[in-house]
Length: 97
Length: 249
Image 1 (cartoon, chains in turn red, purple):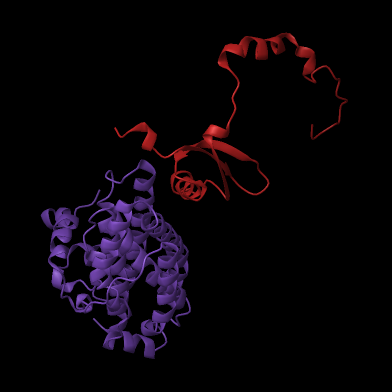
Image 2 (image 1 turned 135 degrees about the vertical axis):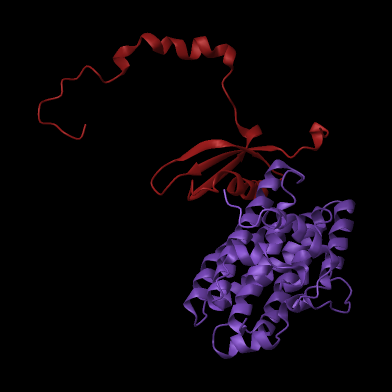
């Protein structure tokens, strides 16, 4: 294994599947800069007609939530069922909802 | 073979041998992502080879298809240019070969897409999109390696210096080329040279490199006079069909 400090930095890859859809995270690639990251993302993640557009961004630029804070961040939402719009009565004959 | 069948054969052989060469990188490239890049280029080339060799067989009309032409001919019957059979060497040498060839191939296919023969035109129109990407990819690497570290620069220069002597052959117009051009099917390859020169020089300037010293051009691939390397390549590529003729799976 080569020296980790000489590895290319990691980039997160987002692919737009088709026009109108949002870009979705599909994985990551190593690359020396943004241009190379786009080429590597193209060769790694769009070989089977998966996409029409690519985004890449340096993984180091992502700030993620601390797994240790998960209880405080996410568990309070578990018993707030009233936040789901499931208490409305939908009149008969309404379609497309 | 008549001129048009030979014309298709040459296009197919160029793509086939380059595709086989690039496939040798599989599992050996400097990084996983680069491994995929080279394998993608290889697969594009082998796809083009299938189409052109099938067309060559169709025009020949002797019952040979692309597989037969790829796996049951001997070294002297291959008509690829000498550039594509050159050994991979280090990564920079592979990139040098790809750089010189992909820019030629892009210009070639762009012109061939206007062929009067719809079969040639259709293959070229499909393939030109593939090779446009190959040319971009190779050019980016020439710049990265040329304008990179001292070591990468030395290797890039060495790769270009070796491959340069095989570039002139790409633009030679012989009897087959002239016959194909005369009936509106083939391309005036000699006329592509100035556009190719401009593209190559522009990338070399970006890469802070200069052209290798001029050398006596090496020719002969189109008429079957190959380097010693092609036989070794074929012995690996053709092994299965030679050991088990007609084997399918």
